[in-house]
Length: 638
Image (cartoon, rainbow, N blue to C red; front, top):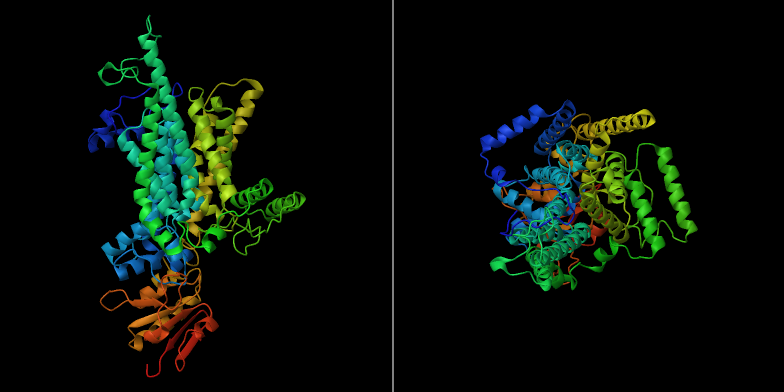
């Protein structure tokens, strides 16, 4: 931690120390290796099994990330075309496009991809961004567990539960952005927890501001968790200031201070001055302002571009109305929360899914809410949907979710069962986690892909699962029936951990759209076909159209497409022989101040999606060819 302040008394007695000690911080690499070797030597068989499973999954994910070509659906539509537009035009300004998400969705993760694109000239390393974010999530979640009082086994349990969650396993080899967002949220959380036990230094304030800004510029939904975290930080800082003042007044009063109360650094400020009552408030307010200023510096340029383009920092009405909840009455929020929970906890047991969905739909009707109401449902989607299958965009997390929920409830209601000396921090953190989940369900509409949107909350909650599991697995002598119940609980916990491990292994082995074995394996599928695992019938169609356009000698090529069409393959297939970006211009635009290109100004047109929509843009006399999803048009003589 940074800052020159001496550590303050903890808000709650016994709060966990966090961060490296000065000796550890200055330890040479050989010393760290010796510590790691000693930790492994002293670890029990269970801890070694946990660590080995985590390391094995992370390494296999790294292999898949390096072998597989980017093939996420959204990435083909807007994540990766966004990067190509920046490279082609040489700046971050907006451009005319029919796909509004290319310019309206926060680009934080794509900024990282842009650096890899400029360094390597291609997309071979793109999957490493999410893989690295997944590693950060594991490390920071383990640190949060330590900050809340967890020992080595609790930290390993936390990392194990998170590492074996299928959504984490699959996204760690993807060009999605949810793990990147979760990593920034987790970084904010661990910095906030540092603030529970000592006044925050300037360096940490800058870190909190950066984490807030990076969350906002990556995925604004992550702010749903960062907000409560910052509130917790502010309250803790004010509490520390009050405690500091109380200690100063006690030191100044006649008589000796209470036993065990340190007064030298906490009771006075520099020069022996007693702290003023308003000093703590002023410092906390100043720190809050600094956090917001740093966050604004990070996300401000993007928000300024969106505001200038659409007149609103959150983009056009279609974006503001499609994802956020449009009704906030309690019955609607309850139905939305139940549907989100149903999808998040889905299992392969179809009868259980049907029974749960029928109960929710029937209950919604009883309280006067249409469960398919567009005001609380994304697009034209219909609840329920199967979400158990290991697909990176929608896979459920019933095991990790259930463990996290139990851990949060125990930490909130019975924190002494986890750690009797850290009840305050445990309860406060559980409140933040539950607040984030409740805010999410009241602000974000249900959608089939909602499980990945709430991934940040799962990463925050898993440390509570690790702490609860560790408390459950502690060995104590319990006579009689209590001991029997304890054995049953321990056996159940071990069974759940084994099931989690199996789920993680199956996800990395058979997950979609990147897998180790079976049809579509990264070992047996060509690079080009890997990109089209989700839509294999389109692979040859794109090649066919691109070959015709290249053979025509066209240089300036128009794009005709709809909002959810794949654009990225054109950037790959039509790249110049010397590796330079092709000149691709949109013939449609949803940006009011950026008109599309004139079809008469291009040498060829490539189309995706609808043939009639494409035909409307083709000038008279041009030849239009179409195969299924893809088409092209050329002028006479080409």
